[in-house]
View 1 (cartoon, rainbow over the protein chains, first blue to last red):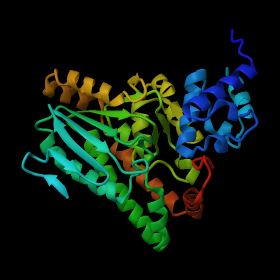
View 2: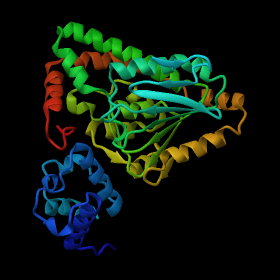
View 3: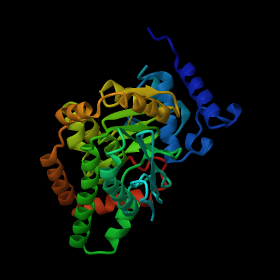
View 4: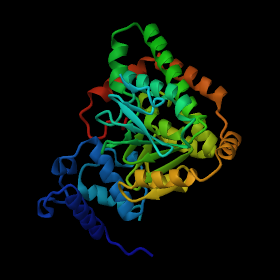
Length: 82
Length: 275
């Protein structure tokens, strides 16, 4: 049974994004636009999506993420599939 | 054209791709920035490779197709070139040009698909559209865990045009084809292995190494037996491939496609592949 909380999921996303895209963790906030915060293009967005799927062992159809641009909403989408 | 004829076309270095032979293994490397988009230049060099295969097959047992670019295996057809060329000509002319391009690339891909060699696609990163279709002509797909596959064509008002649907249908179940085609969603290596598309999943950046190790193993088998086995189990779906070209050309003549291409080419969105 999965006991991971939404806050834990959010925290793991922020840690993963900061580590991979080499952005100080302290500079990332949950409600920030992650495209701008990470400075990522379309190919890097796919890279992030794949890393998140691999990390959380979930499938995230990209149409479900259409319009999602902040970490908190992204965490909610992932949490719903855990 | 840097084609070395003296060794039976054993080496080539082009602008979009290169190949070389080492210990009976041909390595076909893609290296056209930004992500090996398949346009007219790539097609010409792929045709040169297909021509060279007649000689190469006599001294080789395996072919590995891989990308030298960090961005991925191949992002598919060069949509920018397709869009810009279609702007410069009448619609009927554009459809004729598209049909000619498709027929030429089908000849190349059918040649590789039916090759006497055992063929391996070593995949990482973006493997979309025509890139996915290039991988599908290979006998085996070895992918690292960061690979991502997709047929985004429906988002442009098109279907895959390089043989993707018939080959995916040949290799996997029809329901899987419908899912990937009709949703246009991208999926990762784990999913690709679950549905039987990918034969080996390896760590990030390890696909080429694993493909080389597999090619060495393949070299231990009697070639005549391997060719007979492949010929038996991997028929080329010629009729469906022909039909695919017809459907693509019918769809391409619609205004919706032009606007879809325009939107894609002019997009500054981080997710331009989404409708």
